[in-house]
Structure formats: C-alpha cells, structure tokens
Image (cartoon, rainbow, N blue to C red):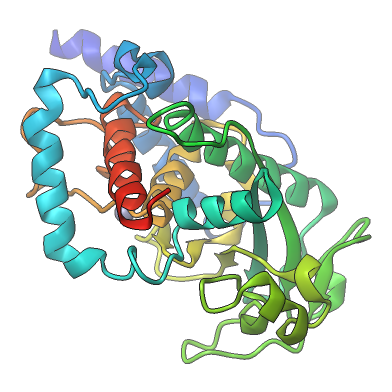
Length: 321
Ligand SMILES: [Zn+2]
C-alpha cells in the first residue's frame, strides 16, 4: 500500500514538473521554492475533497447545510467571533467582498469588483502577465460567487472583475497597451515601505460614489474595491489575504493563474470574503480538507461554500438586504 502510494505520488510529481508552463520567466532564485510548491501541490491534489462545484447540497436555495456540517459550521462561527469580535469590522466597515459586491450591485445593478495592483518592486509586468493575472482573479471570484448564486436572496449571478489601476515605481513597468488604465507613481509609501494604491480612490463605506467624484483623481471610474499587492517577502509565506485585498510574490501570481496552484488565490480571496484560517490545531468537527485550511484542498469545497453562505446569512440579516 505504502509503496503504491509513493509510486503514485512520484508519477504525479513527474507529470506536474514536466508539464510545460507557457510564458515562464527565466529562472530566478525563487524557482527552488516553486518546485517545492509543486510537490506540495501534488500532496494537496491527492486529498479527497467534495468540490463545491459538484456538491448536491449547494443546489438548495435556503439555509439547509448537510447534517454532518451543522456542528462544524457552528464551531466556525463561534471561532470567527472569537478571533474577530463583533465581526471585526465586517458589520460596520463593509470592506470585504460581500458588502462591496452588494454596494456595487445597488449602485450599478450588476456584479462588479475593481482592483488596483500595487507593485512594490522594479519588476516589469507584460501584457500577457496582466491578462493572466486578471483572468485568475476573475475565475476565483466567480467560483466563490457561484456558491451563493440564488441562495437566500443573493442577487448576483456573474461578477465582472477588472484591474483598473496600477501603483508602480516607474510607469514603464506596466508593459503593453495601457489604454484606460490608471497608472500612478506618486503613491504614498506606507510603514513597510511598499507602494500603495491611491487611498483616496479606495471604495469603502466612508466614500460613497458621490464623495469619490471629488476625492479620487479621475473620479468614479478610477475608484477600486480591492488591492492586489505584489511584493517580495520571506520564502515561507505563499500569500496573504485580508479585508483590503490579497498579496503575493509577483513571480507566483504571474505563473500560477492557470494551474492548480490557484488554490492559494482561492484561499486568500476567501479571507477577503471574511473567512478565517484553520490550521492543524483548530479543525471543525468532521471537516479535514477544505481550502480555508491551508495546504488541504486545491479547490473550493462544499464546506467552504457553506461557511461563505453562513457569512451571507449574517450580513444579510445585519444589513437588511
Ligand atoms: Zn490563510
């Protein structure tokens, strides 16, 4: 048994490493980490999970989680409130994905999320890399939203995600056709020394679209909902997700927007939906492998979906949607 499992893993490692990746950068120091991640990816793919996209329980349009998940979901909510007292801003600051989606829906009648990408490095980003990055963000956003479509009054079916602005050191870093993009280099530098998107154009509940017209240079069309920060940091951190957006090392997000390593983006965007981390010590009863438990699932699972549905129920009740 052990031998055959090892052989299976070895075979998969061979396949993954041999799989040609288009438009890969020239080898960089990080490539060693990249190989390690791919081996890790194999481990994740070998775990049995119930993908949200095929889970029968998600066909229901009312709160009716599978019996085996009821206690686990209660534990998750208790843990959420423990780590985020009063929702830690979720109920008043309205900065996470669901409130933003709802605000944009009420403003425009459509599913819409706009991003600003902050590159605190001197790296160039090609037109193809930009397109891949946007399609990865778009794909994962829709995967999460698909778990809410038609559920308990959630009104959005499709989300149009766009990258509308870049914060860079030099304008020339953003290569290719930049028509319609807001690119600026006069961004503020925060305490960590990273380039920031223009805070005046960040759309949160403190800036209505009316305020935005006067405070954001360029007005409403230059306002963004979320940030994607591309920065270098210690090798053992794959990514980061919070209410303001997500962060990755640039080589990682540019290379893995079209393969199974997209699980990291699924996980980090899950944080921006308000979902919390689960490590090895805190495991909801009966739930082992899901994407919000790091390195445990490559895809959004049935359990991840019900955790997000729970958030929708809570936010809906709080906001009277
Ligand atoms: Zn996490």
